[in-house]
Amino acid sequence: MPGRRRAPGPIDRRCAIRILIVGGGCAGMSAALHLQRGLRERLRRGEVHLTVVEPQAYLTYHPLLAEVAAGSIDPRHVVVPLRRELTECKVLTARITRIEHATRRAWADAAGPGEPPAPVELDYDVLVLAPGAVSRTAPVPGLAEQGRGFSTVGEAVGLRNHVLEQLDLAATTRDPALRQAALTFVFVGGGYAGVGALAELEDMARYAVRGHHNITPEDLRWVLVEATDRILAEESPELADHTLAQLRDRSVDVRLRTTLESAVGGVMALSDGSRFAARTLVWTAGVRPHPLLRDTDLPLDTAGRVRCLPTLQVLGPDGRALPGAWAAGDCAAVPDPHADGAPCAPNAQHAFAQAELLAANVLVALEGGPHAPAITEYRPGAPVCSTSLGLGRAVAHTRRGGRLTGRRAWWLHRARHLRRLPSGERRVRVLMDWALAGLFAREVVPIGRPEQSAPADERPV
Image (cartoon, rainbow, N blue to C red; front, side):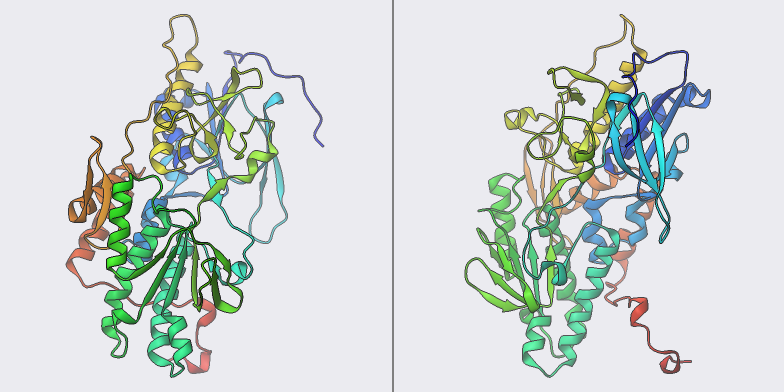
C-alpha cells in the first residue's frame, strides 16, 4: 500500500501546474481540447502540464455506431485519435487503477498486449474526472455465452457481419428450425442505443434480402425487449409513442414491461412466458458508472457516480467544493434543473456541454484573485436528443422544444452529430461517407474474421 503524504496546500504559482484528466471519451477529450485552447501559451512555456490518461488511444463517438453497423459510415471515421487532436497534451495510453485525492496522487497501469502491468504514479494539482460509463449487464443465464454488446466499433462491425452471415445461413440451410433461429434478432434495451441499432440493422437487412431468392423481409423477426413501460425514456412521451408506432409498422415485435429471463442454448425465455430460438442476442440495457470510481476517495452517490455541485466541482463531505477536483460526463452526478435536481442523464449532449463549462471554470479557478470572474453553474438547455431509424427516417427534438419525425428529423440528426464530432478531419470523412452512400447502392457483404479464413490449400489462386 503506498505511503501517505500530508494533504497538499494551495497551488504554488511559481511551479508548473499539473492537470490530470482521467478519461478520453466525449467529456474527457472535449475538456482537454478546451483547456488546451485556453492554456496554449502557458503550456508551451511550461507553466502548465496537461496529462490525459485513457486506455484507448482514441475517442469513440458512440452516437454514430448504429450507422457503422448499418454500413453507412466507415468504422475508422467514428474514432478520433487523441494524440492527433491533443497536440499540447501528454497522452498516456494506460488505465487508472486508484486515485487518492487527499494526497493528489493517482496510479495507472500501462501495459501492452500480453505484457505484465507497468505501474505508474502520477502527481497532480488539478483533477478532471471523466472516465465515462461501462455497459450494465445482468445475471441472466446464457447471456455471457449468447449475448453481444454494442459499445465499441469492433462490436458494431462484428454485429453487422453476424447479421449478414445469418441471412446467408438461412438462405442455405434446409433445417426449418435453424432457418427460423437465424432470422430472429433480439435486442434487449429500449434506449437510444438499442432502438437506433435495431432500426438501422433492420433497414439494412431489409435491403440485403433482395439478394436472396428464398428470403423475404416478412421472414425476418425483430424483437425489442424493454423492462419499463416505454422506449426512449429520455424523449417526450409523444415522440417515444411515435417511434414505437413506427417500429411496429415495420413489424418489429416490441415487448414492453418484459425482461429476458434466460438465453441458455440460444433459446430466449422472456418474463411474459414466451420462448423462442434466436441466434442473435444484442444487450443494450443501459450503462453504469465506471468501476474506477470505487477505487477513489471521492464521495459517490447511491448509483456510484461522483457527487458534484452545479459548477462541476466535486462535492466534499462538508457540503462544499472539494479543492482541485472536477468531474463531468457519465461518471458525474451533476444536478439537472430540468429534472428537479436529479442527476443529468448519461448522454453525449450533457457530456460535451459539461466538458466545455468545466474547462471554462477550471481556467477561472487557475486565474484566481479578487478580480477573477465567478465560476458558472451548469444550466443545460432543452433536450435536443435524436436517433436514426434507418435511411431517411429519424425522430428528433428541436432546440425550441419542437419535435420532428421522418426525413427532416433524419437530416437534423445527421447535422447535429456531425457538428458534435470533435475533429474537423473526421467531420469531412463522415460527410463524404454519407455522400457516397447516397450515390451508390448499399454495401451488404460481410467481412469475414481472420479465424474463419479457408485453409491455404483451399484458397483460390
